Length: 376
Ligand code: GAL
Ligand code: CA
Image 1 (cartoon, rainbow, N blue to C red):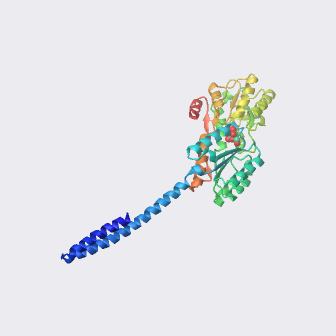
Image 2: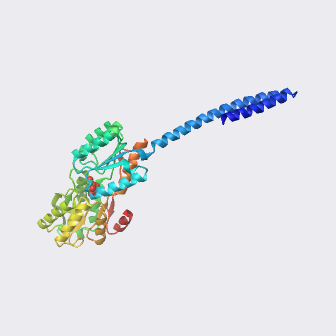
Image 3: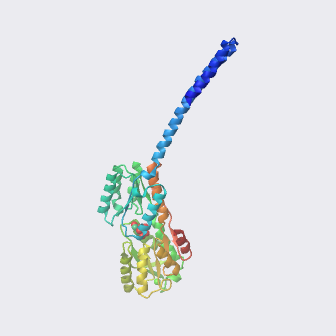
């Protein structure tokens, strides 16, 4: 291209020179010289343009390579596959990662089997394999510092999900400028909403025996987990903040598990038939509680109240049927997408904030259908 241009202009200059040589004026010779100079300048400009074009092409090729997510490897550690909510979460996470350009073969999701030693081993394996990013739902939030040190030491970016490390740990990421973040909701909000669902019904309705106090039993998730701690604390606090007196009849650990909760609530109800409210830190346990409530011949909304968290499909159907008072939507869609987006931001170099939050949604019979529809 450049060569053609130069020779074309040179030919024109030569033609003009010839004309000058054939007895034409000096002007023709001068014009010929000018044209020749212009030819050289044009040729130089063409060279510059060609170089710029090459540079642009190289930059485009490089950035296309960087954002080519199909080649990137993602390691995902889930604390336990046998957890209803985390199953929704990981399924959505995988689908969304694929929709964003990752290859399914490059996404490996492993089951920590609720054992930190097992999970730590899995993290070490991912590091050996050289994954490009890790998404971790820790078995023990208290192991976060050890996990972070391992992963950051290997220079792999890290996205924590679902089980929030403590404030000291999060502060460490920021002060060291590490590529580590947490994506999740604030469990205090879910607890508050559980309490508010009852407060909205009015004290007269909930204080079934009319003694001026709310007799309740609490079924907790894994107590090592802030979700369990905060939901336990803030659900009751919402009643107290409304000026209600409370009376805790029993507080048991159901470890997020339906069958465990079923057994615990069966025992509690027979020991404390005066129970007015059953608080469960999640829906799986509320479903277990409901089995025991029904087995005891009690009726939710008539002689007992029951609230959970997560908005599992089955729980939403119970809320619609009136067999559960309410639940709180734990948005696994927003959280899994947020985690995947954070992973992508680390890979592309865009980076992330150290905390990426999301809101819970209060669910009663009024909006359970629309939440159900949004999940389909
Ligand atoms: C909570 C959720 C529970 C359980 C737990 C696991 O956010 O409500 O159902 O999945 O996470 O850490
Ligand atoms: Ca009462």
